Image 1 (cartoon, rainbow, N blue to C red):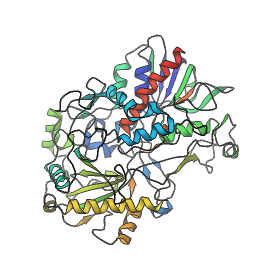
Image 2: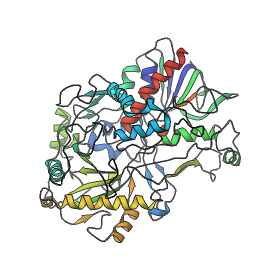
Image 3: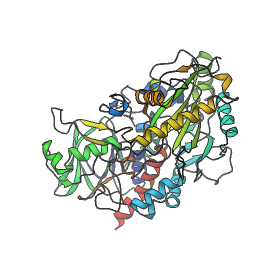
Image 4: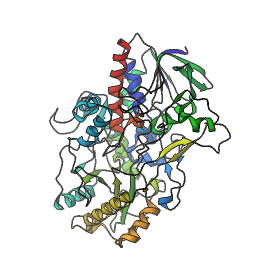
Length: 527
């Protein structure tokens, strides 16, 4: 059947939520369209194996354009290309962000997006399995399992000790409204295995007769009747029709790309690309934000890191009990700190990995090492998603320009983060486990040489957002109910609607957005 009430494009963190929640109503028919295939691969289930999924059929394997402030480099941008989307290939970190993040959203899109208003949607998604008393922060009955690291490295405890003795508070609950301090990383796992949005939401819902999950189905463009979205044009499956709404959940790259190639964007640029204008919306693709990261990695003189963790004994321990180093997400602890500019909320994240995480983990390390990843949480620099004018077929290719470090303040903040990491690594708790620099980290050098190392070695932390920003202003791409301005019957529900990137990781807020959106969609259907 090719006619549905709702068509959801993209089976990632948001799309799985929407497909499950909308199909709870047995009177509607829902299609979930995904260009990738099923999530049937052992490395998806094994937390420590997530880098092995990069540059495979489970990854879109995007690249940015050359970044002038990063030595002219084109950066690798992995994005999930399977059921579960990036929640099937990420590091499983469940980090809501800071209260100020959502209060900033409220300033852009209204009070219903403020911190206190959105917390119930996090709790609706969460099934906390940690040791703390129920109801303190997390929900306990949602579809997504969340737990502390199952078998953390002893080095991670040393990192926490170094942070505490450096003056950072230890947080029993990382996802409290103010996450300033250090904590073990909450992860999306069940019994030591990855628990993606597909696991929590889609698999139980897929048994319903009113939900069709269509993998290996790529959407070429949206179909319109005048200013109303009526369905999607697919490669190989023809046209799918939506009686009520089409909902884009293709992510911060895919959703603006589909809008642009379907005629919603800057009119001049669309005409230059040979695309008929359906609605003028110049901000489509703009406001691109991402977390830039730089790895401070040092050799470890002792064989106590995760290098070489895939021994037969560890594999057996993992397969039998879901424990051991293979249950690690690598990023076992995090600290949220303020730079020397002393902002009101943390502007840096320090991620500890008991392993040398270099080049996205694509090259398995042969030497022991530890890493503190420096993450720029609130970049002033923004970029843009556009159509690639050099491609032979108009609108078929996408151009990604994050504009990294265009603002000098971003580089200064990252230098502050490296200096903080250096202080922690020299602490008595960690110093016995560190020696000479690895990777792009040059060691303790002056600010000028460090700035050059950051420019030549910084990489994405995989968190693009903002390209279909929501807002109350008429220039926003989507309104506060996530409806695309200028057309009817079309919404965007994914990380692209965030007006400002969160101080944390983007999977959790994307799930919360989708939980809220499902409620909005049901309300609007009732009139």
